[in-house]
Structures are given as C-alpha cells and as structure tokens.
Image 1 (cartoon, protein in one colour):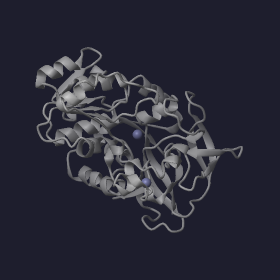
Image 2 (cartoon, rainbow, N blue to C red):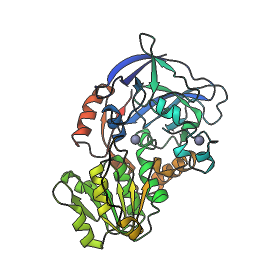
Image 3 (tube, helix red, strand yellow):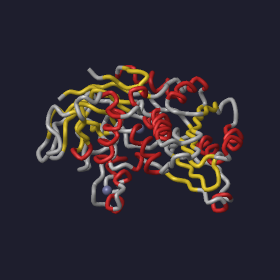
Image 4 (tube, helix red, strand yellow):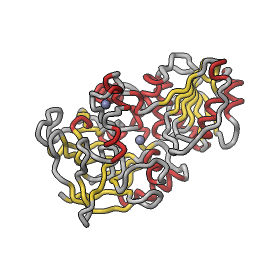
Length: 368
Ligand SMILES: [Zn+2]
Ligand SMILES: [Zn+2]
C-alpha cells in the first residue's frame, strides 16, 4: 500500500515528506494506522545528527493509532483495537531481559539502532525501490506502519488517542524515572531540570509522590506557570540565576536531581545541587559525543549516586496499562502535556521551534 511519511535521509538536513510503498505485515507483525505522533526531544537529536542511527529512515517513535490488519500468529490484538506502539521491543531471552530489564534489551538492540524489524529486514521502499528503515520499530511519522506484535499495547477505546501517543515515550519515561529508577520517597527534596514532555511527567509524578520542596528548573522563564500547574513548589530560571546556591540554601541540597533534556551543562548543575547521599538521574538523551566535567571526590565521600534512566525502567506490557489506568482515575495532567497539534508537512517548523525552545509540553502530529 502507499503511505505518506517524514524521512530523515541525511543527518542535519530537513525532513523530506515522501510517498512510500509499505508491505503487508508478516508473521507476528501488525499494521497500524496512526492517529497521533509526538515530536520528542530525541527526534531532534536524531535530526541534528547528534545520535547516530541508520539512515534513510522514517522518523518518529512516539505514536498511537488503530490496528488495521494483523499478520499470522498475532493473538494480542485484532483489527479495530486502539494501541500505543513502543520503541523498545524486548526479546525476552537475552541476559538483560532475563533479569527483568526488557527496556534495555540487548537481544534486539541491533535492530533497534539499525532501523529494521526483528528479522533484520525493512517493510518500506521509496519510489526508486530503495529500502527505507524504521525508527526504533515504530516509524512514527508515517500515516501507517508495520510494527512487531510485541510492540503494540492495547488500550481502552475511551482513552484519547492523542494522549495515548505519549504512552510510547514521554509518560512512561518520566513516571518510571520517579517510581522505578529514583524511587522517590515522600518528603524527598527533588529538582527537575528541563520542562519538556519528559520533564513535566517527572515533575507530576514527583508531586504525586509528595516530594518537597519540588523545584523546577528551566532556561525559559515563561514555563513557571506550567511548572506550578504540574506541582512545582519552586521555580528557578537557570538562564537568569544559578540554581545551585538557591537549592543548597533552600533545603541543603536535593535528595534527587533529574536531568530531563540531555544537556551536559544541566547535568553538571544537577550534580552540584545534590545533598549528601543524593541521586542524580540522567533521563535526557545527550548528543552521542557529549561529555560532562564533574568532580568525583564527593561521590564516595557523600555516598552520591548517578543513575541512567531509559524508558523509565518499565516493563512495557505491564506498566503502560497501569499508567493508562492512572490517567483515567487520577489527576495526572496527561491532557495538559499537549499544547499543539500539527500536520506532517509542518514537521520541519516543529523541529525549528523545539530547537528555539518554543515548545511547551508536547506537540503532536495529527493524522487524517
Ligand atoms: Zn522520546
Ligand atoms: Zn532481550
């Protein structure tokens, strides 16, 4: 079938909108018609060539839609089901999967970075017959995609599909960072650097975990109202003042500091904000060659910890339905994350707006 998609053909070049040919789903694969696709900060890293990934590929990794067809052997969904599609598909048998960490599955890592399906091949070609790769199994900026059946999570039909798209990335990444990776305790002093889609979820989850004080830090002063709406008790604009002194004076340092943008400068600032025995949680994906300069003298002396967080440490099939249920029963503000909707043809403008820090929360591509 013919599909319309946004492609990254070369690093640091604009997306191209192209018509492609998509094959039907094979065994244990599902054809999904997307309803919404979010534009994540990691998409920008990929577009700028800061994260090396096999090209050319259909961009996008945060998407939800409706199942249109299934290949042989698929038992978890049927046509008509609403699904969120996950950008990591655990193999279930590698050493990390066996240890319950399918979010960092090593068995499927080559396919993940190589932009193929699980069998090492791709399902789409351009008008000249050239193979086009998949972004992280899901190819989000495409009106339809073929995805592995183990990467689709069925959702209740009453759950809005625009919010469902965020179940692919920013919601589980943010909530999992708080509950799984950092295990924030009530009363912990928490600071969150960077209020993008992920950072706002970290903030809301920490608020519901009763963190205090809960300090939001962002380069944009205009995000203060949003930060407070998501539960921040304090806001610091780090393009105007150094948050380290303010936080050390306010509470003697943070028990947990989250960095949710992937900026080495912010990671260093977060490190200096910690209290003794504090945890630095790096949530944002940094450019691949980025380094941070931090003194480690205090690491053993104060028993500090540095933790990486990928996909919130979640088990996709277990935790995404739980987060959906949370959204339907609690005041988690998922719907407030979405501040803009755009058409595929506007994707280069969206990338530009993100680069200029003009996006509050998430903008999602709305499909026909
Ligand atoms: Zn993402
Ligand atoms: Zn695995």
